[in-house]
Image (cartoon, rainbow, N blue to C red; front, side):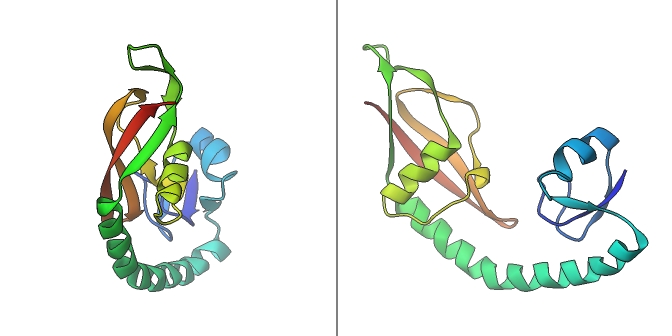
Length: 149
């Protein structure tokens, strides 16, 4: 299936890219979430317009993304989670939405939960590294402290 991306999709492409994907991936993931549109002759004419708009946003957002990355490094983020006894194991795991809420509560910027990349599931009390994808060229590293509630 030939599609035109309208949003940045990790490991696939940037807005305006024309990509060939499997039918199921396109129909069940990219199209319903409006990450892409079907590549028709009329839509291919819009590719340049999508790229121009994306380029204007990137130039404007790159400096801001670097500022936000700097402020995130200085932030101390604490997530409270329910833990089992003294072992430090959590009931469940810490989600990206909880991390976004904790960043906001600590006085940080409002982040998109999809931009938060948790390497391995956080299932224990302690400090854990998390990456935040602010821009295609800017990624911020964040230390999240998980404490028992």
